[in-house]
Amino acid sequence: MKIETHTLNDTNIAEITSDNEIIKTTDDGLDLLGNLYYQGFDKIIVYEKNITSDFFDLKTGIAGEILQKFSTYRVRLAIVGNFSKYQSKSLKDFIFESNKVGQIYFLPSLSDALERFSK
Image (cartoon, rainbow, N blue to C red):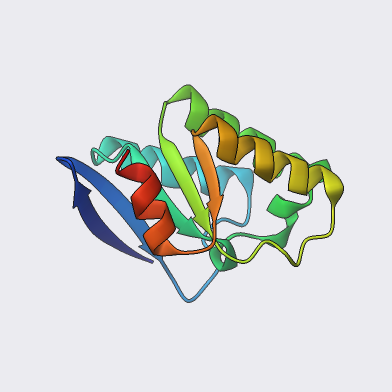
Protein backbone atom coordinates (compact mmCIF):
# COMPACT_ATOMS: atom_id res chain seq x y z
CA MET A 1 0.00 0.00 0.00
CA LYS A 2 1.27 3.44 -0.92
CA ILE A 3 0.03 6.81 0.36
CA GLU A 4 0.44 9.75 -1.98
CA THR A 5 -0.24 13.18 -0.52
CA HIS A 6 -2.04 15.84 -2.55
CA THR A 7 -2.25 19.34 -1.08
CA LEU A 8 -5.17 21.60 -2.02
CA ASN A 9 -6.03 24.83 -0.21
CA ASP A 10 -3.62 23.95 2.62
CA THR A 11 -5.37 20.59 3.14
CA ASN A 12 -3.57 17.27 2.80
CA ILE A 13 -5.44 14.57 0.92
CA ALA A 14 -4.31 10.94 1.09
CA GLU A 15 -4.54 8.93 -2.12
CA ILE A 16 -4.21 5.22 -1.34
CA THR A 17 -2.87 2.96 -4.07
CA SER A 18 -2.14 -0.73 -4.03
CA ASP A 19 -1.98 -3.74 -6.31
CA ASN A 20 -4.07 -5.68 -3.78
CA GLU A 21 -7.34 -5.32 -1.90
CA ILE A 22 -6.70 -3.15 1.15
CA ILE A 23 -10.24 -3.15 2.52
CA LYS A 24 -11.45 -6.74 2.85
CA THR A 25 -13.31 -6.38 6.14
CA THR A 26 -14.91 -3.71 8.28
CA ASP A 27 -11.83 -3.74 10.52
CA ASP A 28 -9.56 -3.06 7.52
CA GLY A 29 -11.62 0.04 6.69
CA LEU A 30 -11.56 1.25 10.26
CA ASP A 31 -7.81 0.65 10.56
CA LEU A 32 -7.21 2.66 7.38
CA LEU A 33 -9.40 5.49 8.67
CA GLY A 34 -7.69 5.54 12.06
CA ASN A 35 -4.16 5.40 10.68
CA LEU A 36 -4.74 8.20 8.18
CA TYR A 37 -6.78 10.32 10.59
CA TYR A 38 -3.94 10.26 13.13
CA GLN A 39 -1.49 11.21 10.38
CA GLY A 40 -3.50 14.39 9.88
CA PHE A 41 -5.55 13.47 6.81
CA ASP A 42 -9.22 14.41 6.77
CA LYS A 43 -9.76 13.62 3.08
CA ILE A 44 -8.99 10.20 1.66
CA ILE A 45 -9.13 8.74 -1.85
CA VAL A 46 -9.41 4.96 -2.25
CA TYR A 47 -9.87 3.00 -5.46
CA GLU A 48 -12.82 0.67 -5.94
CA LYS A 49 -10.48 -2.10 -7.12
CA ASN A 50 -8.82 -2.05 -3.67
CA ILE A 51 -12.10 -2.70 -1.83
CA THR A 52 -13.73 -6.10 -1.47
CA SER A 53 -16.73 -6.64 -3.74
CA ASP A 54 -18.74 -7.42 -0.56
CA PHE A 55 -18.55 -3.69 0.24
CA PHE A 56 -20.73 -3.00 -2.80
CA ASP A 57 -23.33 -5.58 -1.71
CA LEU A 58 -25.21 -3.42 0.78
CA LYS A 59 -26.79 -6.48 2.43
CA THR A 60 -23.41 -7.38 3.97
CA GLY A 61 -23.38 -4.15 6.03
CA ILE A 62 -19.67 -3.58 5.39
CA ALA A 63 -20.20 -0.30 3.52
CA GLY A 64 -22.61 1.02 6.14
CA GLU A 65 -20.29 0.30 9.06
CA ILE A 66 -17.20 1.74 7.41
CA LEU A 67 -18.87 4.83 5.96
CA GLN A 68 -20.60 5.60 9.26
CA LYS A 69 -17.18 5.83 10.93
CA PHE A 70 -15.91 8.17 8.21
CA SER A 71 -18.97 10.37 8.81
CA THR A 72 -18.56 10.24 12.59
CA TYR A 73 -14.94 11.39 12.38
CA ARG A 74 -15.84 13.90 9.64
CA VAL A 75 -13.28 12.42 7.29
CA ARG A 76 -14.34 12.87 3.69
CA LEU A 77 -13.88 9.85 1.44
CA ALA A 78 -13.80 9.50 -2.32
CA ILE A 79 -14.03 6.04 -3.81
CA VAL A 80 -12.79 6.15 -7.39
CA GLY A 81 -13.86 3.55 -9.93
CA ASN A 82 -16.37 2.37 -12.48
CA PHE A 83 -19.60 1.68 -10.63
CA SER A 84 -21.77 1.01 -13.69
CA LYS A 85 -21.03 -2.72 -13.40
CA TYR A 86 -23.10 -2.90 -10.20
CA GLN A 87 -26.72 -3.54 -11.07
CA SER A 88 -28.26 -3.20 -7.61
CA LYS A 89 -30.86 -0.43 -7.51
CA SER A 90 -30.23 0.09 -3.80
CA LEU A 91 -26.49 0.56 -4.43
CA LYS A 92 -27.17 2.99 -7.29
CA ASP A 93 -29.52 4.96 -5.01
CA PHE A 94 -26.92 4.88 -2.23
CA ILE A 95 -24.22 6.21 -4.57
CA PHE A 96 -26.54 8.95 -5.84
CA GLU A 97 -27.46 10.08 -2.32
CA SER A 98 -23.87 9.89 -1.07
CA ASN A 99 -22.64 12.09 -3.91
CA LYS A 100 -25.38 14.62 -3.11
CA VAL A 101 -24.61 14.86 0.61
CA GLY A 102 -20.90 15.46 0.10
CA GLN A 103 -19.24 13.42 2.85
CA ILE A 104 -18.67 10.26 0.80
CA TYR A 105 -18.21 10.37 -2.97
CA PHE A 106 -18.26 7.67 -5.62
CA LEU A 107 -16.44 9.16 -8.60
CA PRO A 108 -15.00 8.00 -11.94
CA SER A 109 -11.52 9.53 -11.70
CA LEU A 110 -8.81 10.91 -9.46
CA SER A 111 -9.21 14.35 -11.03
CA ASP A 112 -12.93 14.33 -10.15
CA ALA A 113 -12.09 13.42 -6.56
CA LEU A 114 -9.50 16.18 -6.23
CA GLU A 115 -11.93 18.68 -7.75
CA ARG A 116 -14.65 17.74 -5.23
CA PHE A 117 -12.18 17.99 -2.35
CA SER A 118 -11.02 21.43 -3.50
CA LYS A 119 -14.45 22.91 -2.71
